[in-house]
Amino acid sequence: MGFAEEAVSEMFSLTMNDRGKSFDKMNRGSRGERPALHILAASSVPLTPGRISDDLGVSPGRVSAILDRLEKKGMVVRETDPSNRRNVLVSVTKLGRETDESMFREIHDRFVRVFERMGEDHTRQFLDRCKEFVDCMHDEGFPGPPAGPPCKI
Image 1 (cartoon, rainbow, N blue to C red):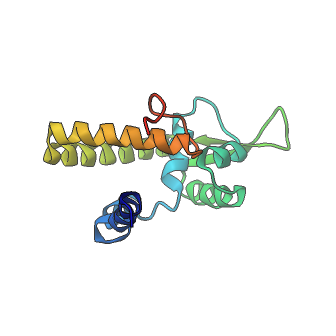
Image 2 (image 1 turned 90 degrees about the vertical axis):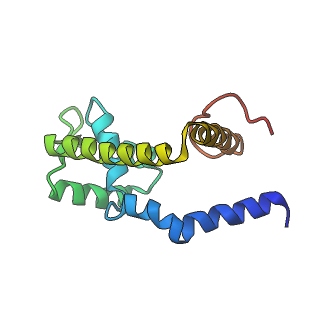
């Protein structure tokens, strides 16, 4: 097995074993709600479920289920588009915006603690490698904008 295959195996192992449970804990109970809520909170205008589906890269049916849960919790509202009654527009509520900000602060604070434990040098090296990894993924056709110049590989 070459180094690249070993790296993939180690990456999967890190994210699937007990260490990977750290990521699960950050997303526990979310079932796609956190990213959908964040997209809505970041938007200055109401969005269609189709736009949310495109942004999340999930099916319209999945978005519908996510919006149902968020609506029941009072975090979003769905309304008929007055300019085109066939369309539905989704807006974040005050509670939804506050929840998004709270979740962001929680994740931010956890990352700060992790980076403090790693130290500045290791953190900078880690971030440089992450940027390079994202660039290479983009060059391989994965969605999303590149983080910097084309991959050096």
